[in-house]
Length: 145
Length: 145
DNA sequence: ATACGTGCAAAGAGTTTGCATGACA
DNA sequence: TGTCATGCAAACTCTTTGCACGTAT
Image (cartoon, rainbow over all chains, first blue to last red; front, top):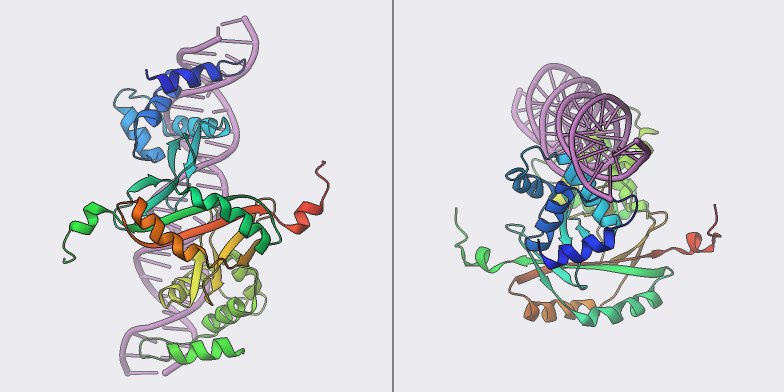
């Protein structure tokens, strides 16, 4: 078990919260995978070690970890959500060909909320910024059928 | 019928494309409503004048108008999409309380794609920027049950 | 007259819910 | 031992698909 999960376990060691095999496995997978997995991907992967694990349990735990602030749900279109372990704030570039996601930081954007606050009548509390493009792998391929 | 719809009709006057009552009504509603309606809202509203209109027709036409580049689909989470008639590029502020959407412009963001291009390995083709906050109406209300 | 568009019902994907059983603290 | 979590099946929401009928051009 990795140190990130161990730290989170001690955070979660409270009355009313239990650590189960399944929850541990999901946490471990999310902390070690760097691929922004979907619920389905997590389910299929964990199924190899825990053949009885159910889709419901994956969803339950993703919602639980989200409520606890340990993970972030990444929502793209009507298709399925992706999830990532929460580390420091960053943004995502999404490949429009293969769906691959990369992280990047852009500290300049922090100032933009103030500018936007002046533009709008809303009391701004947050923002979403995503880039779309073609990843290196998809860009190398010839564009013919 | 308003002038925006009239202009679009002449653009669509091509072999293989037909103008129907339903399509016209959807176009008219999208050009006059400034509320970023959902497919369901469009359906319910048009149902008053065209009692036989179906949900399928609304979706069909929204997809058609989207392919023609006349409207923009706004996707928020797993919940239903919203649609707006395409005018000039702008961004959205979404109220986290009531879901209300306002438009605003922020030309500074255009330069950010270049900065992001340097940060990432992707060939950047576009971006998404959304703000979240509390609208004036929701902000006025006392925060008690 | 010729298809394009419509409208009904059914399918589909992703996620949540109800509930009896299992297992962590 | 109490009750939180699991896992199965069913429900749910939003959207798309199949197909016969209607209707714009």
